[in-house]
Image 1 (spheres, one colour):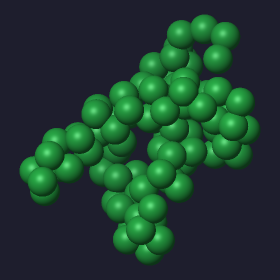
Image 2 (image 1 turned 30 degrees about the vertical axis):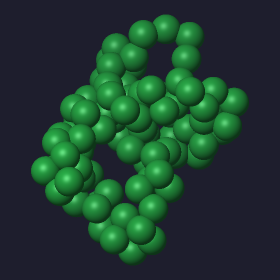
Image 3 (image 1 turned 90 degrees about the vertical axis):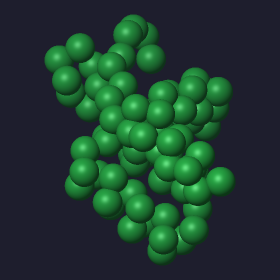
Image 4 (image 1 turned 120 degrees about the horizontal axis):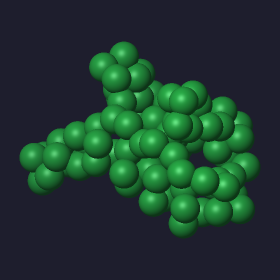
Length: 86
């Protein structure tokens, strides 16, 4: 990415939209680019990449994209929800 980024948790509206999309298609990982677009910011709090740009970035830098997704998921409380269901 060429520098440091800030990863934040999802806002309520973003979280609801994510869950609605997952319910529709049943594939949480299909929403990875949209989650990264919503949660990864630069030092000024601006979006680093659009969903399409995250698609391209993830194709070339798969591990980095998954690492950022894991941080966003944890900050959004999604890991805790999965643990509770299990």
